[in-house]
Image (cartoon, rainbow over all chains, first blue to last red; front, side, top):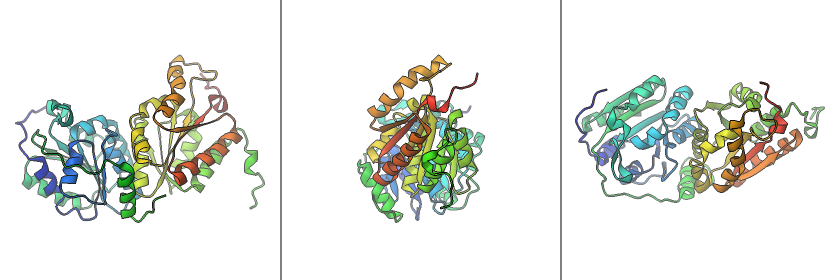
Length: 198
Length: 179
């Protein structure tokens, strides 16, 4: 396993570039920094922010993608969150949705809890796991130019689920906090898709 | 209706067909599962239904997350597992509880009736208390008739009243596993 130099990309700049032209993509963000990153580029009715349920972001994305096959769904999560849901990569690989992308903002650390090193900084490659689980496309990007190309790629059609890793600098930018009221966010999200609250 | 067999006369061995009928009538469009012998007929019926998306899971808590995502996207989901899988779900059930997501889990019980495998017993004992501790409503059925009625009621509570429900299917009803 190759260990490369420490990533230098700013996570907020990366997420801003990734979502600059999000269109009507529906987004589920994993707890911790990805939730703050998603909120930092602008609150949106098509966002579902997690503040817990660690390991669940991509699988919420799966249920959503299966219910809304005509919409693109993005699970925007972190390395720690996705590592807790490794089995879910197998489940998504078998389900093979054509409208679900997982993008891991990978700082190779557990940033929310004191910046302890995670598995991805010690050689574990989430894209290789996704390949082994039958994902249609995978990749790792390290520069803004590469993130911009990735944004164009995920706007296009896919033959199955895709997983991309964006390697970013391990730092905690100022928090950008969305509502922590999951019922409110849920009902707002469903209203965005035309569903009434109970 | 020309059905000569009213639902109240469910044959003891055909409750899976009745559950399938009830869940489809409730417009369940996604089903996820970790297999259990007691659920095998129901899994087979859902898997053969092209109007239902079926997900096989590596661990049960994945189904909690999938059910929440399905609801966000406007679909109803049901989750099948055995009692040993309930322990795997606990933290993920925070999502259903705090988001008030409709949730219907059908749990076949092991470790409580004529059980051969002692390793099933501890989680069997912990199933109902741990589900209740995280905030789920637990309903139990010990006969085929009671199960059909219970699942119909649980489906209405979950999908119409935004409740989080686990229906425990007694091991006595499922029958002894052949070793």
